[in-house]
Image 1: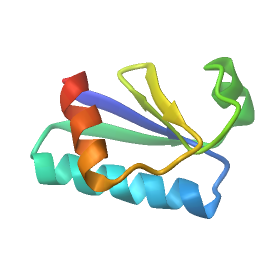
Image 2: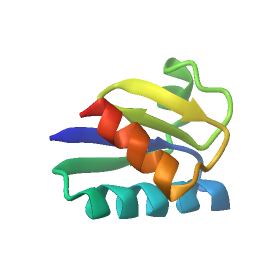
Image 3: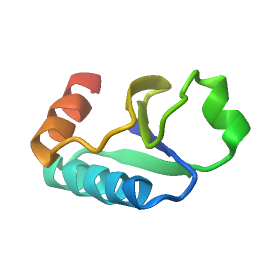
Image 4: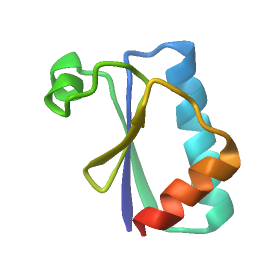
Length: 80
């Protein structure tokens, strides 16, 4: 099972990233657990200074943008 975290304070981009990652994971048919992290201390502990950010299996994959659905699928598959 893949552990996915979306780091962000609740902005529109954060919501878009959450929805896009959920769609990508469902379309891939993988087992996953998703968590939204909005605690600023937990976000900065990971070295993230721009949100939204995507963390898969405790590794920050990117921050500050919302990639395309296809790019998200590639990122998720590479983390399996």
